[in-house]
Image (cartoon, rainbow, N blue to C red; front, side, top):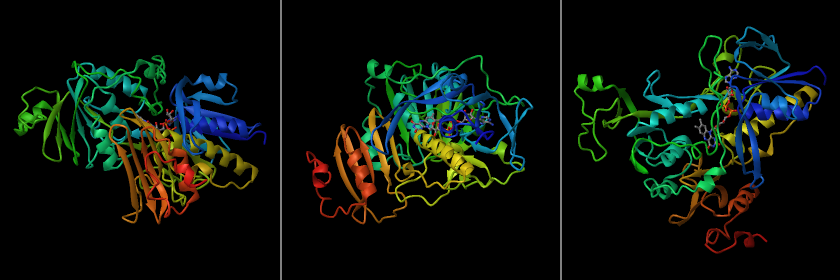
Length: 488
Ligand code: FAD
């Protein structure tokens, strides 16, 4: 296996995990990691909560970190400008080229913005964008947050000292992750003052950037740093100009029609409204018109409407197929449609026939799993070995924190693709826990566990075992009952 050249592009969690795994599996090969960002992401404090659920911290390290550590990866701080897959060659921003035998593309995604080149519209993605956000927020009285996923949810909870208009396109909050019932459970905490435990905060990770390292492509367009990750908002001081904790107003089932300047507003003869729907006479630097015709003035608009895979530099001249969501299609061996080119993390779209309990979501955990598995596939291919899809793709499992509650999502947690053919078991203790089990044909197929429920391992086993629960389901969520006893 000497002289084999593995090249990984991207210093996010997918790329770093891929390079690290290659360094373990492919001993005599040359492994090169190319990162357009001077800071790379490393996983620390990995805790296996159950066989499928893992929590971990993330540290941003200077790109030299991998060089200095145990792992034999050559890290180059550079940007890939283009790919010639036929020649197995990458063209870099400094004019150099790099040849590979096997390539893994892990370039992540970039935020979808509701308006580009508008100084009042900000997308939050990496450490740089968070710093810009913090700076602008310091003088802000009111901001509008657009989007209903994890970023928006974390921001709404963490942000203090500033009025928030939260514009969501769904009927309930945090819709990407939880159903309307769980959203209702959280709503009670929307306007509650935060219990800031300094002890808890100090345990969380720190993100730093090195001011000297400006990230530019050869044509001087900035390239994104790695996406942020778990708990990114919790350890930041995100505070507006007002002396208050939370004041959140939610506008349901709306999108942004247009972003208006004060001049636009005057020219068009339009009027802004306040949250109590009276007229707002404040002079704001920017206004948002929603699809329900309401116009809100604010100091800043945060566009948290998801990311689109960052594929463009690799496409010209190559046959890389894209999925409808813009990701590079990968098969069950993480191969793109170009031979010897693999992809992992946010940049790719899983196009294999998935397990009934798994779906792709662009998350830390999946970036790590895909990066690791892609490395295994690359090595297996060079050895001519067969490889079967990793166990981690059997069950979707995600752990996160929303509104200071532990949230665990398992399998088809939102009854994805089940139409109406499912049964729901529910246990709610106000302010304490929310347990929702999704049953299909009397078998557990998904669950939402909010709070300290201690049910994750049992539920994970029940989903994977496909046990018929007809005889137990009436008691499954009964408080005080140890579910494990049923199955002893
Ligand atoms: P990225 O982390 O985006 O890394 C891409 C890398 O590629 C970067 O280093 C970039 O510099 C490099 N790159 C790009 N183009 C080039 C090029 N042409 N040449 C060389 N290098 C290049 N997930 C969770 O699970 N839990 C959360 O709580 C959570 N919160 C989030 C909060 C925010 C604000 C954001 C933006 C995302 C969050 N996510 C969360 C999602 C998670 O961060 C991503 O799914 C994950 O980081 C994707 O990792 P990745 O390695 O695929 O891509």
